[in-house]
Length: 389
Image (cartoon, rainbow, N blue to C red; front, side, top):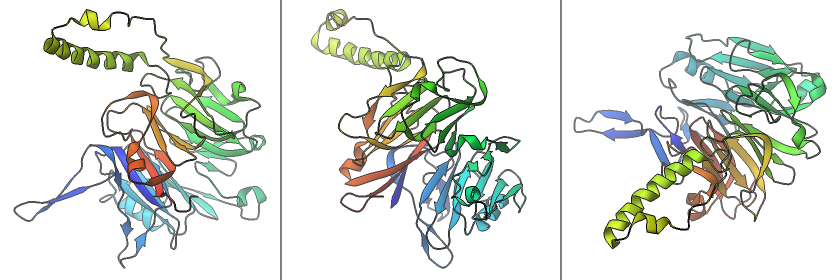
């Protein structure tokens, strides 16, 4: 399996270009905006052994690559990863891990018998917080899927451990900018936190201190959930996508007034140039096109989004203001804010409707997974025709 990244790269979390100048001095130059999918380099240890990346976790300035083959461990890329002592220490101590989760300030690493929480902003060579796992307990013995931990979850801000009722039977959890989305073993969706942009899906803009079931999805089992800065999404067992929250940048795939105005301005400029060439007026070009459009700024209830009518979805990820979804046929669709190239369409344009990333189709690559940082996207691929997992 190979990984490709695109979008925000100011700290080299996607790629670092090395240039040899006339004085034979190597300078590392990071390209801030990577609009075309770029393959991530494999990590090589001192003995020359190449690590295969099994999973990626990303924050705004960092990328954590989880290697699950052989000597399992975590490697960090991005801000401070080459110079920070705490980064080197926690990576060195991650051997044998089963999962990892990274935020701007902390790295959480799961082992079969414990959870370690490392402060990436301090020089400590030991974890700032540790949780022992009772391997004899049936509930604790199950594979930990961070940020979920036995009895609760790990938050990005203190207190780091937050308890959850065992009655929820949590299967997975994703943390947005100021809210959380939880999926239960039965396929129900619960949300809590800030609700000012409708990101909780309860029909209003109020916040919730405790997990509350999203009633609009009741009776429709979900298979996965994801949370962005101020929006949320989930995939049903049948492969349908439901979206809710803020749509200012088109991240819900619904009509956005801001994006439509920007598109009209570009069209107006092109029409003006055309008018000069052919000698017609702009009014003549737009006659008969005036009609009232409906735009959605906030979607407070889950809405069904038709990404592609031909196939179902298998995976979804959310950035701060963009969304990416993988189909069962191996295509990647992206939409929302694209200022840093995080949509992968080799432009910096934003979109308020899903669009297929043609790069992978052209390169005969089958997308099997996706992970979004705040302003970037990472896609896991295999060669088309090979066995997909």
